[in-house]
Amino acid sequence: MTFLPDLRVRRRRPELMDQPGLDPVEHRRALAALRRVNGWSLTSRAVWPRIRDLGRARRRDGSSRPVRLLDLATGGGDLPIRLAQLARREGWTLEASGCDRSGFAVGHAAEQARRAGAEVAFFRHDVLTQPLPEGYDVLTCSLFLHHLDEPEAVDLLAAMGKSGALGLVDDLARSRAGWLLAYAGIRILSRSSVAHVDGPLSVEGAFTCEEARDLALKAGWTDPEVSPRWPCRFLLTGDAR
Image 1 (cartoon, rainbow, N blue to C red):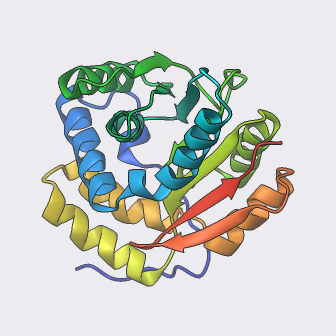
Image 2 (cartoon, rainbow, N blue to C red; image 1 turned 180 degrees about the horizontal axis):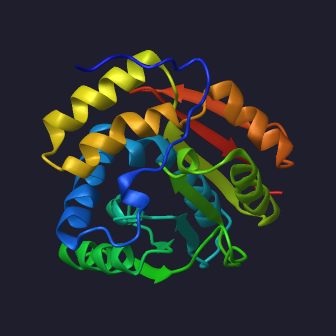
């Protein structure tokens, strides 16, 4: 019998998606589930305005240098793929890339980009144990922060802040409504048993908007902006230094 857990305090527990040796078929289904969730949640539309403004400003200045974007812990790669498509639709080039520590996820993302006809590069990189790649104008991070312990989250945000890039972190906001939505919504959107388990666990391990802002301040971000957004998510924004 399903019951609503106490969400007043963050409770992070290991998710099936994070376990080594996950069956490739189940892994692929879980990544597909995340793609549907991000699509339904309009994740690309949430981060797009700031990226679009950066591209427009560069064109007004007469610069021929493309905006370079890196999606951290990209998973199935749906976010950078969609952002590259949005830029192309507006007639300019977004040099989008994605990195993930999972070789399986990187291969899956590259295949999704090929099917979508999007020129997005994916490569293997662990953002928790390796320095962030340099030379990017925008760093995005979607549905990854809630996987981290607080010190790890602060370290990642600090590295993003020191990069000189525009930081855009989109994640779940811990709440009762969010938990119920994750429990019911994922069952409507996907048959993935992994996603069915991980969805509610993700909300239990997520930060609130206030906690996310505190993390950014601890990481040295200057005046971070946290915007609640539908459905039960937040967008954390930090301008390039």
